[in-house]
Image 1 (tube, rainbow, N blue to C red):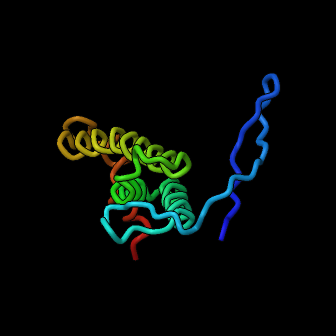
Image 2: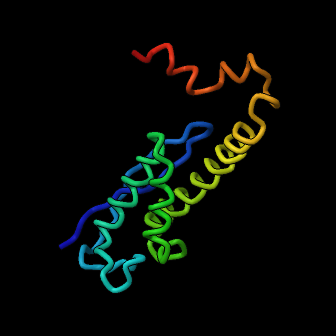
Length: 134
């Protein structure tokens, strides 16, 4: 059984327009995952990698990590679409981590001494929640 996939982008001057050209995908093609011999078929792997990549944008960046971890054998794999989702998930997780970890470390280590009382109380999550507490 074959599944049609669409993927192509054409550029006209300064405007890019997506042109959908069918590519056939055999559903019985096996894709290696971190599970070793278990794996999954190509259509299911593409769908799962795409969903995890998109969920990463919904403030769930750990999904990018899970996507990269699960499809690690495909990070340099043959399938261009799957490889793209895995690589972009890796970039998203690295960027998110590069922003979040220093901010967290600065906030926790520096504390009130670094930020001052006024700014500390405005940035503190406990101060944001306390007016809402019953």
